[in-house]
Length: 629
Image (cartoon, one colour):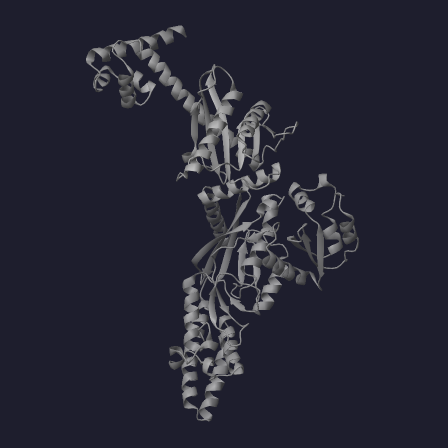
């Protein structure tokens, strides 16, 4: 077993051999995982096995467990319901959950209030109110709400208790005006009960009750009430006819559901079929898929279960059939829970052939398209970059996630044309507009350490000067949260000495050596070796490669200009001014070499005779280079 504290050993020893739910907590008492079990004793103990027999991600969870709380229930079905409610309430870090975004609207009936009203909600909550949905679209939900407003008078004001007098809706019969005491809580509750039956599709019961009330009102000579109930009865009969048409229509009403995986992401695609026609579709992302250590086929039953409970679990509009590639975990219990709540049978079907199988294949293709689009999106890249920064903080034990990271590199050719580069990443993303380059001024020959020290001194001094001057926008006044040096111990030591002279205070600084990707830190003799598949190492490699590329590009530019200058200086009549005009006209050394005699003559201040000398000289040098090879 994994090494565990005496406290956890006592908890494991005293676990009940009963169905229930377990909540795993970290040092801060935060709930990091919620699970269910037919036997709490055997299930929870299974986490604390030999580490080499345990998936790496499960081991990472177990290492963070400081306490375990259990809740015993009467049956596995009760455990499933309780697990679902606790996951929705606490959103634990290691549980797979439906990403909380703006999809799938619900009608919220505020039954927690004395006089409930209807609202639109983007999420069903366990708060004492009733939620009906999820609706396929906002349009269909608005249509349902408009029918209810025409048939059943409900208040729609937010602060009815502060109303001084009845609103317009009360005068036109759309509100029973509880603000003026025209209706009691008991009478209002009867209207709310009818609304609930309507939203559940039980219009037959409402029709019978409304017809009885209409006849009773007529017998008691309450003709206004009888007329209102007659209109309500007619509207309900029209809705009932439409429902009967929907039920008898060929093709039926059902949902089709398929999943697609990629880069620790999972997208769920749902097609909504009503009266045999696809009337809408929606896609959803699941969080924390990366914590699962299973093959794709093994993922599916668990992920489908999590999606069904999150998406349909709190709503009351669930089709009688849901078609999917794999049956969910605990499929019988989930179907029984849905059927019991809706008072009709709900089935999960995994077809192997036929029309539904072909439709499911189409849904799966759409899921893969949505996933591919997301993986290539800017949003996904920003998520990966942020995750890499956090991974770097954790693996190197940094005091905080580094928002601004700067990386430095030195480039030269046998000690000549020595340059330095500074690249900047913000939130793990390259910020090219902040890149800077330095031409070394005080170092002669090959001395990377002294060159690096010069670059850092100049960079820091510029930053301090800008702060003193209050320059806006600043180029150097923003200092890094983490400094990365391309090199080994020697480069790191040179950088630390330069920064110590500048009295920069506490600063996180590391170096990365290319051969073994070793990471060195000040005061530590042994290097850090990060896993080759870790986002943190990939981030550092990207930084280092960018700094190297930027330095090399500047070095080649200077070297090219120097070579051109030395060649052109040998031509009579070419001075600094004409050299600059040639560069402006052709952009680079190679551009001048490729220019024709006519193109050279077209440059201002370059006469045909000088152009001919330039052309001959450069092409002589080119031919000599070929012969030397």
